[in-house]
Length: 258
Image 1: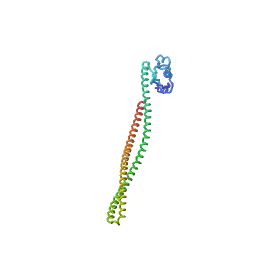
Image 2: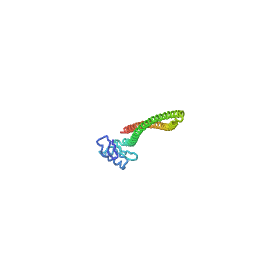
Image 3: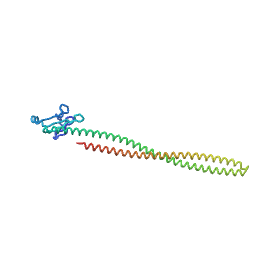
């Protein structure tokens, strides 16, 4: 038994000393000069260098890619050779498909790894940005609370000033002519207290709006953080699937080996 490649070189043989030798009959078959080589018992008896048997082409997708030869009585070797050639052609075609699948899988895996690496970098950067935003949001919320406390103090002072101005006006009225100057001061204190109260009320309203905006921002940050976590989990799952794909392709390639 001998198997020749597309260059008519013997690559498999029962007599291993023949491996690497060019086979003349295979060369003729691969060149398209003949469709097969048949050596009858009579031809072998006439030429001691020859043995009875048959060599057939291995055809894959319409192209002759090698030959298979088998010695023995032509009635036996010829059909067996044709069957073996068809089996080898089927195996070679399947093997090529496996290799193509492996190459395609490798390309997919490389592409996914590249995308995964970029996505991980983006997720890491997003996590850092989220952490900074969360820190800034908490700091802003803390400052708003402190400002709100100051505003409440201003409101308390304004209220007390208003009470004092009212009391001063009452006392000035009792003093009559002598309390006229003090009444002017009391009215000014009342006006100032009212102005301070209105300003404090407006500021407190603005602070309330800022606090609501900060609360919305914190909610968005939390959702962004959760999304980044989900993306990380999804990427880990994709990597696992790609690893399984590689392993499956390697197993498939190994299963197709002769």
